[in-house]
Amino acid sequence: MAPALDPARARSALLQARLYAILDASYAAPSQWPTLATQLAEGGVGIFQLRGKKLTKDEILTSAKVLAALLARRGLPLILNDHPDLVVPSGAAGCHLGQDDLGIPEARRLLGSATLLGLSSHSPCQAVAGQALGADYLGFGPLYATGTKPDYKPIGPSKIREIAGKVTIPFFCIGGLNPERVSEAASLGADRVCLVSHLLLAPDPTKAAREILSRLGRNPPFKDAEES
Image (cartoon, rainbow, N blue to C red; front, side, top):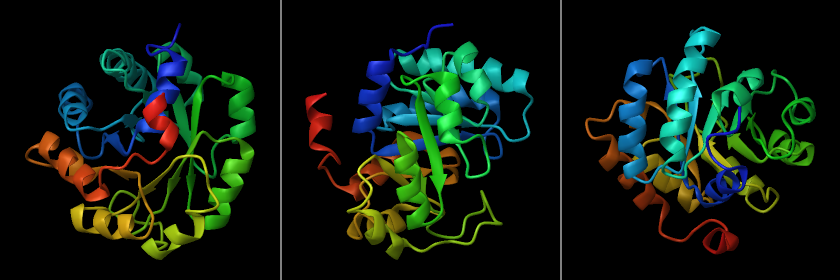
């Protein structure tokens, strides 16, 4: 199955994205995801991830097909959390891997160079290593304690300064973020963030997304993002 979104457009969208939203089954039922995705896209979210740790593969595939097609119409990529084997049949643009999942080189051999591959990083060393391994983007955190992953010790926002000059691929700061914390992260060098519960549980997801983007400022993170 061909990807729902042309790979070149997906990569361009990644470079331009400043706000990454994770549609997590722990906070919103899969039946809510299409509506939430539409609302968040209207608020400026530039890339989405489907995460359903307790869902079956069939449930993930069913939801991913719907979301990949819906988002592709807006020129936005859908990333699957884990499950590289579902990327092609779902039409998703790529997958996101954890430190203990299939490695980036192995996933690249399986999915090819056009597929977007993201990697979670929990320290500056992991971030630099992830870039060297060929990840297309990184999740960096958790900056603060988060109910999404309560077993992960927060690394603290000050770590942003340690990778801002070393990591040249997009990195999205994540973990316990709200508008005030996004402002703090931005002051330390973050220009991209990823949120989960704050967006999914917001009374007005569109408004919530716009507020987060306003806290990041107006300048795009990469000069070539404007030229893509």
